[in-house]
Amino acid sequence: MNIYVGNLSYEVTENELQELFEEYGSTTKVTIINDRDTGRSKGFGFVEMEQAADAEKAIQELDGQDLKGRNLRVNQAQDRAKPRRRNW
Image (cartoon, rainbow, N blue to C red; front, top):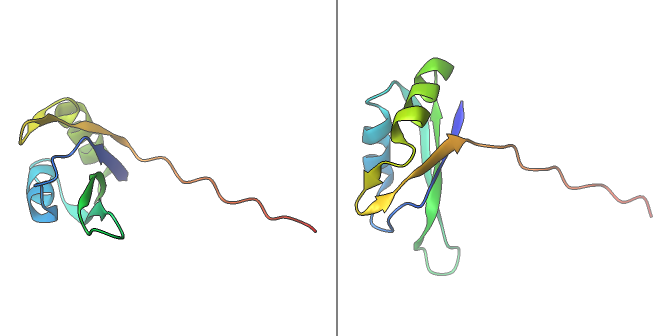
């Protein structure tokens, strides 16, 4: 399951985020989104967890929890809408 993690402190690293989520189960991928121009964190990221049950527990327990002075927003990531093809 892919999990959205928002309201991250700019100091949080991918390793710290992985350690936090691995308390609930195995993670397969952790990504913090960075600004293309500055390289600075945009304050959100994604965590992929192997087991849906582990992911649900992590979402329930971590949503609203404090991490480095910020209350996390944690929920199941939504698929991006596919761009519509234009028929010219």
